[in-house]
Structures are given as C-alpha cells and as structure tokens.
Length: 321
Figure 1: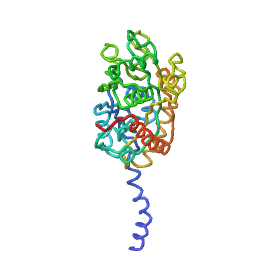
Figure 2: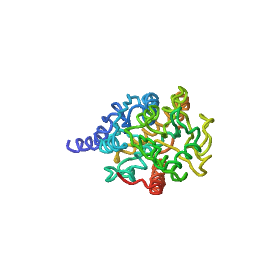
Figure 3: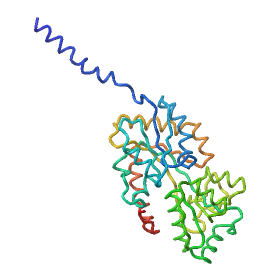
Figure 4: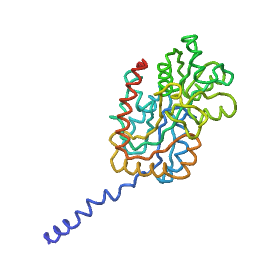
C-alpha cells in the first residue's frame, strides 16, 4: 500500500508544483499608472494623453496619467523609481529628467540607468523659439543683434532644463548674453512671453503653434537641424548658427527589478500603440515622431544621451542647482 501511495505522490508532484504558477493572475491585473513628472499641458503630458487610449486597449487595462511636477521632473521621477516592481507603475523619461538631471540637480535622488529598466523609446519632437508678436526682433538675426546691443538685458524663460540648455547653447554659439528665468513648466514660461514680461522662450509645438495661429507669438527658429515638415515656414536655428541642433525625445521606464517577462509584454503593447494609425495621425499634427524600439535600444540611447548632454551642459556653464 505504501508503495502505491508513494507512486501516486510522485505522479502528483509536478501538478502540485505547477499550481501556484497557474494560479498567478495574468499581467497586468489592474490599471497601469504612468507618472509624468511635468505639469498638465506640458509636451510630455500631451504625448501621454494621446497614447493612453491605444495603450489601454493593447494592455486590456485602464491607463492612468499621474502628473507629479516639481524640481525639473525630479519629484515625480523619484517617486516612480521607488514604486513597486510589479510593472503597474511606469515613468516617462525625457531629455530633462532622463539625461540632463544628473548634471543640473545637485544630489540627484535617483540614477536614470541604475534605478529604471527601460521599456522603450516613445517619440521625438522639436522646440520653437518664440517672441511676442509685438517684439522688435523680427527674426533670429534680429534677436541676436538686440542682445549684442545690451548684454544681459534680454530675458528668456524656461520651464524645464531641455529648454534651458537649448537657449544657453544658442547664446554661446551666437556670442550673446541673456538672462534666464526658470518657471514651473513650459505652459507658464510661454504665458509670460505672451504677457510681455519675458523676451523669448523655446516652447513645444503643441503649445506654441496655437499661439502662433492666434497671432500672440512669432516664431524665430526651430531646434531641428533641418527644416521641419510640419512647420516648413520656420527656419532652423542652424540656418543662422551652423551646427546648432536639438531633438527632444521621450522614453518609458519601470522601476529596476521589474521582471523581464513583464517588461517584454509592456514593450510589445507600447510598440503596437505607438504604431497604430490612430495614434500616428493624432500626434503627427502636434509635431511628435513616434519610434517603437526594443528595451535594450533605449538603454543604449539613454546612456549615450546622458554623456552627450552632460558635455553640452558643461560647455554652456550649466551647474547643478
């Protein structure tokens, strides 16, 4: 009898071992929370609002966008880095909080490469340099001439470090001095341009183009190194300052330690959402260029951007604050 029982136990063992795995719920089993470390209405927020719907369809769960602005993206990004590793909290990593943060924030409380596992690249876009419509500078050459007449008198606003380094690089290449004024976010930085309190700013396309069409601001240049298909009438800054060029990008990460199968599933769903005709049509009108990638591609890209933008920050004298 004991032999029969022993054989039955042995035969049942594989099934018993498999039971916990079969009992585990499929991922995701609840809503996905995506932390956007910048204000509502920012370029990062706008992109995610358009992506959330097709992404939710691919994942089979609601996608909740959580804006946690402050500290040039540090507050929200740190909170995401410390979230659990079950794959239900994602974080948008951009030029500002993903590549520039190590060089502009003293004692950064997270490491973009060590504390996050990449899901993949999202999209890239351009910034446009604008002044209020009544401003005496009619073009970029005119703005540079005004700045040379009165060193330090012209002001520029910036709502994130991406816009800061874009303007600081322009000033260095043009040999001019302008006074930078930090703002909580891009929308606020643009508001004071329209109000006439600041001379110029680099703003994102979703925010800047409507103000251009309404006649509130004038565009002087675009950060793309070549003419931008959506806005061919705006000359590249590089047409006046040869060699100038910036592309502003966005990627997605999860807290380090998130299981590899979860990351792979998240990447597949995100890439399908990015490649959907519905999403592409919506964001093309706003100046975003989607680019689905694999996680490792984004990791390599992020490491390269941290190095490159660190060198640029040192060149223009941006120091940790």
